[in-house]
Image (cartoon, rainbow, N blue to C red; front, side, top):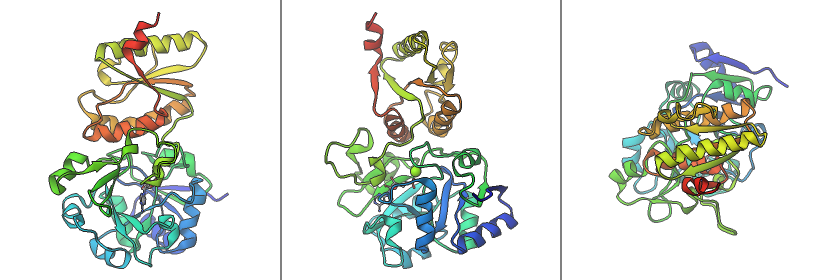
Length: 352
Ligand code: AMP
Ligand code: MG
């Protein structure tokens, strides 16, 4: 076991982080999406230690982070359509798949011919990338399968004793991981929805597709375009069930499900919009932001899922958001957290 330091990002701690990265060690750092677990992307051994620290399956590729576009030339080809996107959304929460060059070790891309590239906008991530001068391979800094960490506290929970340094930059703004976009196979396709929405991409690119598995489980034998979508993901320890329907019915159904679960002796709670907190006050309500503001739900979702674990909740009933705009990213994560268990509120209320 090594000692894990959590330090605010100062000139000294950033220099220490840079030194660690140059010697093959791992450093966790904040980005505008979630905290990343970084290694020198050109150092095969360092990259392998990311997979070990996270317990991440070796066939789930990593995103490579850069400080400036000029770094791309050594690392990958730039596909058609990428330039205007980079101009508009970089630095920011958009990851673009690009055909890789040999400089990128195959461990980074899990043997795939493309590499996922991103230029984050968080000032600490940018300063780290600038000071170290390396491309940094970094997945989310959680143990594989757990909700991604949106504060250094959660990184520490998962990575304590495994990595030497966590740079603290407070809470992450977006709260969900970056949008992953494939421009290498015909129509541009969103493999993972995130803060840069389909609608925003379409303004630049024209029609954009969304991979089928974004809102449903993979079918038997279906190849995952994005390997990360194969795995149980974003899940708290408790069992999450989603409830959809008319607003008033959903609130009544959540109430009923939670009360019944408690009567059966389970620790149960609800995840609901701010507007419904008072109606559900006897159901241990967890606030998932305003019904009118899906970005607030994105911002709070992983924090809420982690809190449920800390509280030992076993049965969790949650509202849903419309799967559009940032709501698509929220429903992608919430669907997986719930293993796609979804009830209709009117069905719940019809059962007496
Ligand atoms: P994480 O870094 O934990 O946020 O996960 C990165 C996501 O990007 C995972 O869902 C990966 O499967 C996906 N990804 C990374 N590289 C590629 C690639 N070359 N092709 C397809 N998906 C990728
Ligand atoms: Mg992840």
